[in-house]
Length: 290
Image (cartoon, rainbow, N blue to C red; front, side, top):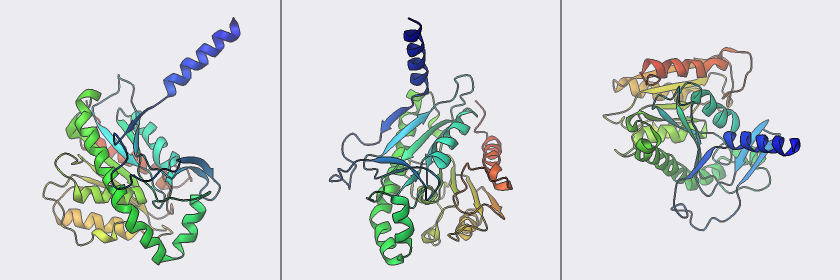
């Protein structure tokens, strides 16, 4: 009897930890209808973190705050991984849990990725050495990934009233490749997918250099490290300059050290606290108030 009670308590605890998963499309995702290989999750020894690969069915995993803390603000989180994997922990679930503790409802997005084999993180390093092949891969997958980012915001805004959220307080944050999706969304949203705020974190954005900033562009928060191995810090400066030149609100945090992909990892250096600065920025925008 005691064992049965312990089992039931464990089952109840597991159900409390379970997160709601929302599929973005009712059927096959548009543009990749013939993709039928299985999604994969594993710990990458190359990246020293948990990753997800071979996403064919884009989905949102919901992290809800304590009802007593909920403030009506929501955020779509786009993990990075070179469009070949998703750094699902330090750039996904860890961020979602931190934001939920501040009353924000977080939606971790699994967007479509390039088809990879046994170890996508190793394949990424190999492919990156051949810039032509990497660009060919990117040309095929990037439009689909951006479409998923826009679809995620459209879903959250449309269903906000059902979820106890404010449609005009739904934003998006992304890291690296996910930051590129976030930056693209910041330029190419529609009225149905307009974000209330955007936060590209160590994002690639060179291709957006000559794109006009939308007339009703949302406020932007940026963070990156000067010693980024992929030399992406200038892209954050570029975005900041574009926003401020258009007289739009922007805040940039550029750290001396941190490398690429610091996310929620703790390294004992100032960039560990970028998420605190983000929280302060959200608060200054009135987004942490009920």
